[in-house]
Image (cartoon, rainbow, N blue to C red; front, side, top):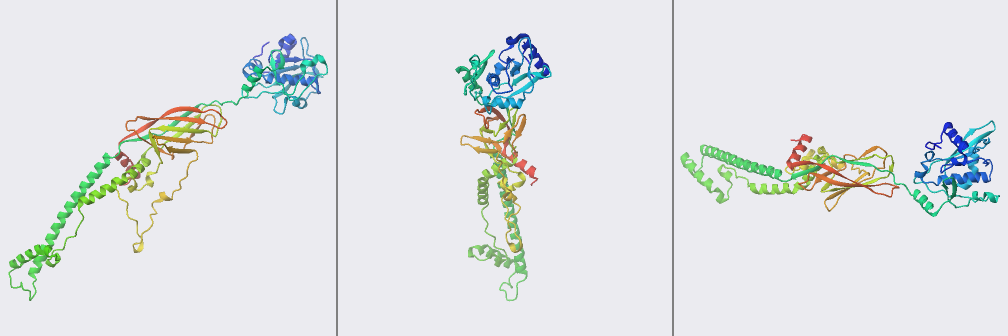
Length: 492
């Protein structure tokens, strides 16, 4: 008979009944049994026979069972070869379930009851047992049954025995069959198909110092030129003021001045001589009409100290510069399988890089990013009292850690990122936030970063692994990042 269909619906049930009537016991096989003389309406051998059949077909291997009625087990009650008289109507599914439960146990096989009427008073019953599946435990018998008649001894049941369907009969399982059922009941490893991707590029700065060195050199040269220019202007101004003072004093000599009767040229000559000797006498030059010049620090000393200060600040500024201008890294994970992954953990290892926390360029003041910009003095209020720098609101901005993302820089030059979303639903894309980290490439010769990922999930005793690459944003000199920072903040 044809068995490549599920025994659902009146037409399919009628097809099975016709085969039993036509073939009798010959129609029985792994998934079908026919009984014409049992009474499921009361406790006894009839119920025990049904229980034994249910246990036997439920203890089949899924691949074998699938070849018959799509895995279902079918017992036909009230039919045999040549006739289908049926049994008296009145057998209710819940009543039969109560009679079967002592044999099947509280977590026994799932089954259903269908029927086809044969007359006003009789009907054929179909006990339909659901298909077995991988991950399903074996089903032992939970109650003894001993038939009253010795002829029915083959229908006996024993508490703890395991029954299997063997062609057209149900019998006790062999050791190898028990082992196979134990393997069937092992926890299933859900199908996992993960697409892992990275959004954003790692930052590679080929040369971090040359551009800054040129900037510092240019600023130092401008400082020297400015100092020379200021020196010349100061000397010229002092000379002019002294000249005007001498002329004025010579023209306005008071009565009693010992030089009053000397000619103006003679007085001028004396004053020039005394003015030139004033420094040796440590006399204030203003006595002779020329202000004493201020003692200023050496320009080269100022430049040297300033350059040292700028270079000392450069590592911190460079870190802030990268964090404010590099592309932020996000991780995208898609579960393409139909399985639901609860509490997954993905460990990502990225070689040849280090991670830093991203910062908003607008939150960073210029002296935090550009080493040649000195920190301004604190603002002052009335009476010259210093005021707190309320504009530096970055210090007041709360730092909220994302519990789904955590990262660590390893001593071997790699970054470990741990992603812990609450779940990965089927055919759903999960992405991390855009404020987790930026990546800085360590090797100037790199063209891309290589990374690996491993995934584990709650209830799955297996680890899944994969690889991916991260593209690189190549910047030839750190000065390019400075320009990007200035452009993004519209400063200077």
